[in-house]
Image: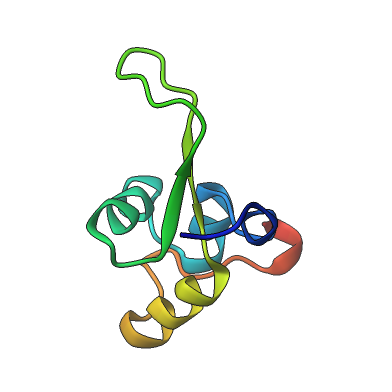
Length: 80
Protein backbone atom coordinates (compact mmCIF):
# COMPACT_ATOMS: atom_id res chain seq x y z
CA UNK A 1 0.00 0.00 0.00
CA UNK A 2 1.29 3.42 -0.92
CA UNK A 3 1.78 6.13 1.70
CA UNK A 4 -0.12 9.41 1.40
CA UNK A 5 3.11 11.34 0.83
CA UNK A 6 3.89 8.98 -2.06
CA UNK A 7 0.42 9.42 -3.59
CA UNK A 8 0.91 13.18 -3.82
CA UNK A 9 3.30 12.71 -6.74
CA UNK A 10 1.16 10.12 -8.54
CA UNK A 11 -0.65 10.99 -11.76
CA UNK A 12 -4.34 11.50 -12.47
CA UNK A 13 -6.09 9.53 -15.23
CA UNK A 14 -5.87 12.61 -17.49
CA UNK A 15 -2.12 12.86 -16.99
CA UNK A 16 -1.68 9.16 -17.76
CA UNK A 17 -3.90 9.49 -20.82
CA UNK A 18 -1.84 12.43 -22.08
CA UNK A 19 1.47 10.69 -21.43
CA UNK A 20 0.56 7.32 -22.91
CA UNK A 21 -1.85 8.15 -25.72
CA UNK A 22 -4.35 5.57 -24.49
CA UNK A 23 -8.02 6.43 -24.04
CA UNK A 24 -9.42 7.38 -20.65
CA UNK A 25 -11.33 4.10 -20.52
CA UNK A 26 -8.20 2.16 -21.42
CA UNK A 27 -6.27 3.86 -18.63
CA UNK A 28 -9.04 3.03 -16.12
CA UNK A 29 -9.11 -0.58 -17.32
CA UNK A 30 -5.35 -0.88 -16.84
CA UNK A 31 -5.76 0.18 -13.19
CA UNK A 32 -8.67 -2.20 -12.57
CA UNK A 33 -6.79 -5.09 -14.21
CA UNK A 34 -3.61 -4.37 -12.26
CA UNK A 35 -1.60 -3.67 -15.40
CA UNK A 36 -0.50 -0.31 -13.96
CA UNK A 37 0.09 0.32 -10.28
CA UNK A 38 -2.75 2.55 -9.13
CA UNK A 39 -4.69 3.39 -5.99
CA UNK A 40 -8.35 4.40 -5.76
CA UNK A 41 -8.76 7.53 -3.66
CA UNK A 42 -11.92 9.25 -2.50
CA UNK A 43 -15.45 7.94 -2.19
CA UNK A 44 -16.62 5.02 -4.25
CA UNK A 45 -20.33 5.30 -4.98
CA UNK A 46 -21.98 3.69 -7.98
CA UNK A 47 -24.43 6.54 -8.64
CA UNK A 48 -22.31 9.61 -7.98
CA UNK A 49 -18.84 8.40 -7.20
CA UNK A 50 -16.28 11.10 -6.69
CA UNK A 51 -13.24 8.94 -6.27
CA UNK A 52 -10.61 8.29 -8.87
CA UNK A 53 -7.52 6.25 -9.52
CA UNK A 54 -4.09 7.79 -9.15
CA UNK A 55 -1.19 6.12 -10.94
CA UNK A 56 2.40 5.47 -9.98
CA UNK A 57 4.42 7.32 -12.65
CA UNK A 58 7.16 4.68 -12.62
CA UNK A 59 4.58 1.97 -13.30
CA UNK A 60 3.14 4.01 -16.18
CA UNK A 61 6.61 4.43 -17.71
CA UNK A 62 7.31 0.69 -17.35
CA UNK A 63 3.97 -0.09 -19.01
CA UNK A 64 4.83 2.14 -21.99
CA UNK A 65 8.29 0.59 -22.32
CA UNK A 66 6.71 -2.87 -22.43
CA UNK A 67 3.56 -2.18 -24.49
CA UNK A 68 4.30 1.05 -26.37
CA UNK A 69 2.16 4.14 -26.73
CA UNK A 70 -1.53 4.16 -27.58
CA UNK A 71 -3.00 5.16 -30.95
CA UNK A 72 -2.90 8.91 -30.30
CA UNK A 73 0.69 8.74 -29.05
CA UNK A 74 2.17 10.84 -26.27
CA UNK A 75 1.37 14.53 -25.94
CA UNK A 76 4.12 17.07 -25.53
CA UNK A 77 4.74 18.13 -21.93
CA UNK A 78 3.18 21.56 -22.52
CA UNK A 79 0.00 19.93 -23.88
CA UNK A 80 -0.51 17.72 -20.80
